[in-house]
Length: 453
Ligand SMILES: *Cc1c(COP(=O)(O)O)cnc(C)c1O
Image (tube, rainbow, N blue to C red):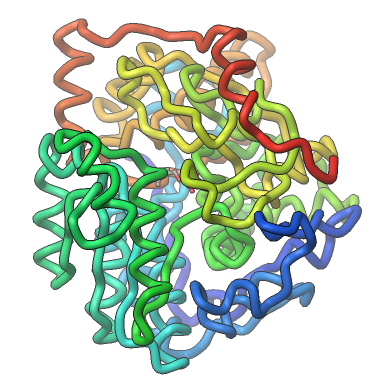
């Protein structure tokens, strides 16, 4: 039996993003200035971001028009297909209907270009010539590099040194799109030079790379900084995913009982689920919505909900979120991505309000599910994506036990073509499970300022 593909005609592609800030049970707690502890004003953010994106970050309108230039860029790969996983259902012998939205069809291979093209466009409108950003494994860097190629902007990416050395292919992809990629720490910033003076062999970290990218943007007139997850406007740009999916589910006459996304900073999870949460908040439907994270980086399941910095160097505003502490570094045995210490303020809020659930998974079972998926549905998932599909499989097994035709929907956030070394380790039996000890969480949280709780 073939799996079923549901295509949305391009004339039906949504022309507005959905802004969940309009429908929250209470307003978000404001971001705070790290120096004063007072709520931030738009001007505090203007050295880093263009004003049109700062306005979007604070916007409370329910619907925001997608500019026609962004719609044109989206049309290169959107609307993305929805699939019913018939072959996976058959392998599991489940009466459940399993659907997945396939975001790997973008040129960079994930959902990240949905916000990258929007951010590049808005920066272009304000006369910005050059964007700086950081990247860990390189998925965000390659998405922004691709977007800058569309809108003819320069793109500079600070890539965590270990990844730069050990995972060269994402870097080569960024260079192919025309971006410049520096290993971080670098000699190009004061932060980088200071760290290299103390430790010339420093392997780098996401926190250091963020600090370098922000310093780059702040020190140049022609440059702004761009972030690939966590912020409100980023999550809003991703809602094109869920808005398309709602139309596609309607085409097959179904509505999901369970909606699942993996959760790093929260952008692909929010992108799929927020348009459905609108129905849940309005009371017209009551889907179970689940964010999935690794047990080695258990932000939503085990972190407290409090103000913390977005980066290790404490340069970003303080955000109210679930956090493992800005100094958190996941155990080296962890291969599955989703390493960020915090969660988006918006996904944190809907979790705190009881609108969504969160679960944490061990990596060996996640890779086992990834391989079952590749052998049935044939798309090779990114390790991050495999967290979502693993929980979808668990739910389908539960439906089998209960004899229910549960309708399960998950986000297939990206492909795993650049993650072969993680798959290789799995096949060689070298992956080990890891549960973060309570003491380590307590220790990581010690440095978090006690503010505005
Ligand atoms: C970056 C990435 C994620 C995690 O980021 P979110 O902001 O939580 O979506 C998940 N899947 C893929 C394929 C990614 O590239």
